[in-house]
Length: 347
Ligand code: PLP
Image 1: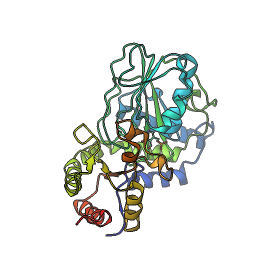
Image 2: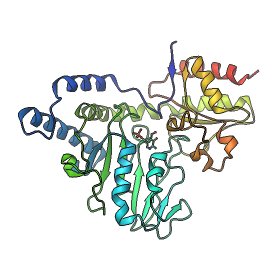
Image 3: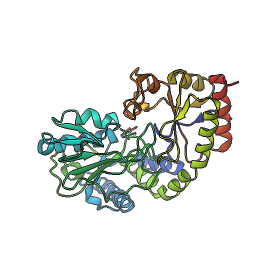
Image 4: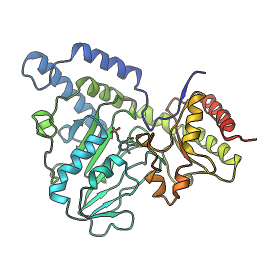
């Protein structure tokens, strides 16, 4: 069967047409979009066409989108840019936010934690979907606050609305697009200041845009309706996987199993096993899965997102994350289950 990749939440493979578009752009459209000659103008034209297509899919104005190199960068630009105006006022933050967000917002002086400490917050940060558990979250009702939504993990897996927030970030490499491109969306009128000076992106993010990656992203966005449908259809396969694993032992549990989750994500607590050992053993036999967030792999820290759900450190170390691709087949899940049985020594 070859290698079976079940780590979509870390990075999903780019769609074949995305790779084609990028290849062509790298050969033909390498001009600098900021240059005034014809090559530059052509690059600028393609850049703005891509921005319009992506903005239309998100239901926002093209000028409200800033192209960045990663969601990590987009979160940093957003939070550093808001800090002079809001950083000394209460900020209510969801504790399971990605480290890309927490690392930046820790510089703010009055952090409080959702869901309890919402009262009086000037800023609210709530991700749409958690990368590790797959749990979906609604934006809390916070009249007057600036509401920030991290859509990096939700995009392409579940419908995303921007009606209930004022700023949001998106990543290209988890939805069939390329790595190295992401979006920052901001509603006009936010008290935001530029921190990365330069003429590009209407002076909001300095640095020459990666046109090939941006065109690749626009191509992937065109396939979002199909991707959403394919992801939606994964839920029964994911549920079958979970039901079988949980039948093996009373100590096994699906994190957030009874709550609304991304349809492709299984966060499995395998009490009595070290998640990283299970992951490594599966890797040796041809399966790529993860222990919680890929961004933490290699680190010995247990997942803060899992612990914020009330699990102990030892339980957090026993979690593996399986995140299916839109085209994962039933036979591939069967093969994983057979391999997992051997690794867990199920009788
Ligand atoms: N936010 C969430 C919820 C994520 O899952 C990730 C990556 O895993 C990021 C932000 C960072 O995205 P990027 O890899 O584009 O920096």
